Length: 368
Length: 79
Image (cartoon, rainbow over all chains, first blue to last red; front, side, top):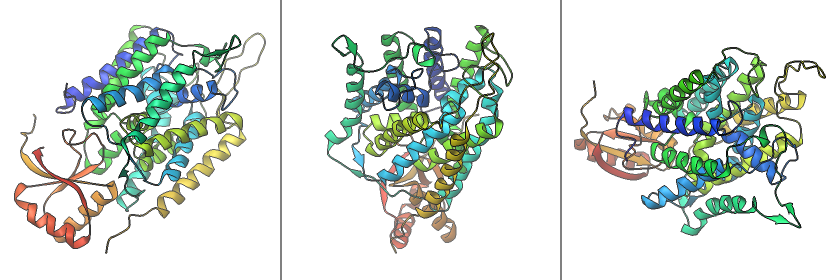
């Protein structure tokens, strides 16, 4: 099916992704986290013991499925292009920053939209930062920002990222001396998940639809700013509407800043965290979801960005950069406001400075 | 109401910055056309392309040679 020849079909593509997310939410994924690329890569990084925060360790088949789904559909439709060479180390850094910004807000742009659809006003506040970040990136694109072109590479090279993802999935079943090789959370968000097969199928379908529709949260706003095109944002709108209906129908819609699952109400840091994500995603040419899809269809530059996200997740949890979620008081513990600590706040500021340096220093070379 | 699609000349580039440079050069030299998202039918990528009338092919090719922008491909497709 061609998803892209009309806005209605683009809306439909988003709606399908919304239905997948709704089903996975119903089947056990954490609240308002039916599908979050940053959280799920972070959980997978934890499973690989790149960090050891016990509540967020689990190989999420969804992210693996996205890469495999995008790879499969790209091969089947002859759109697989093995390419590399567009400033990979800068992309690695951008990947790290996308993850650090996401974990200060507590979600990637996809989860931001899911949280928005559940009435979490903190996500609406974060949208301001995200849009401003995309706008800043678009400003630098207009001024000639470029990470230079990618070149075609050996076909096999582009299959490494999908193969690694498949490898992680297989390793998640391996035990050594009766002990699982990879870590799995017993409590916390990492312990909440849909059945593995549902997650994998959901991820593959999501990857296929995202590849066909070129779904991208940063690209949607970027194209509105740069070329007044509403195509990519239509996909996001479809996703939002379906999740809104699902949340209202199932009683998950609670409008407000407090009492939201896995969220905090530190407005400034929600805005700045997502500012980093929006800015970095435009410079990298796509949001976290889009990076997974591009990695699946052969872009090793996107695969390096994904590796950067893994490293960013490890740094965020090993060095206390990730925000904590707000929690109401219980009989045993007082209320927690949540939000990033000093290290997380410092990291966000450093990321913003670094993004401006990258944006200013990487200009298109003129041939003459 | 949906706009009727027409056959157009669509130039894709290796980088978004090249597309931006193209827009700037075309504006300066008053060559017609506009930036559009790369049509899905011609690419799975998500960059920007330059869209103009089929009759402007020569002017576009000359301009690109003149200012040193290399196209990825030049397509004729419904936009």
